[in-house]
Length: 257
Ligand SMILES: Nc1ncnc2c1ncn2[C@@H]1O[C@H](COP(=O)(O)OP(=O)(O)O)[C@@H](O)[C@H]1O
Ligand SMILES: [Mg+2]
Image (tube, rainbow, N blue to C red; front, side, top):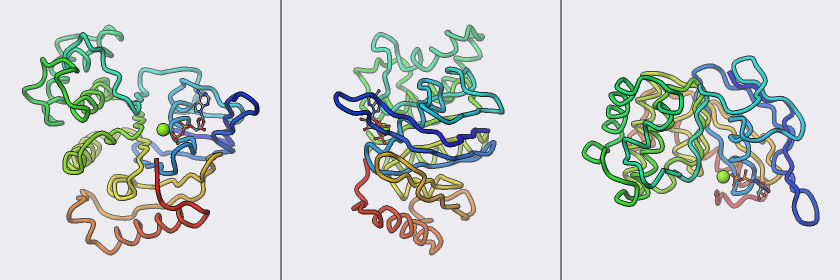
């Protein structure tokens, strides 16, 4: 569904150019859930923006669903690191924005938007404005906005970073349930190794800048997984320990993002 071949991206800086990503080779199968971890500045957000068609690679090729990426597409949703909600719209109004832009039937969209908001624990908050919502609630509204068009490809950039630990576990469980019910091809950037192991079919570890694929780990643990109960499984503990080692090896101290 997603294929990157020798993808590099540099950015001009004041005196030199900054290499953000270096020769990334990565394929993601249809319906697969891939998590990406790596230190702050190793190019994780850049990777998602390249796949989303918001940035062009400096070299290399990217295809989605067999065709080259030429710009943003309706069937590819990106949930950015910041929720970026429209302050004058309610939670429901923000979730409905993509429906309106695409001129899809509003009544049907509104039904789905309400269902999504309820599913992420925002029943009773449909008509609140962003300033009345906590950071974590705003992120959940942004998640619903990304899901409203039932994208075939879902790109998520540290979507749960503003949530407290318990809400974060709830959200990861919700995301897993949504994915099991309707598996979109997903690339999920996180700084939590546990979250990556809980959610992903494969975990991609990027090296510090410029980001290169250092390791790809298949997580062979049956679903549904739970952060609480699965953490005790030897297979989960093994994956988590292994990823810590990989990150530690090349000079990382395991501190991410
Ligand atoms: N638009 C941009 N202009 C200049 N430099 C950028 C831009 N976007 C990212 N970078 C640089 O590229 C590197 C990777 O950034 P980013 O993809 O945001 O990393 P991460 O998400 O892993 O923290 C960083 O050094 C960052 O400063
Ligand atoms: Mg980032």
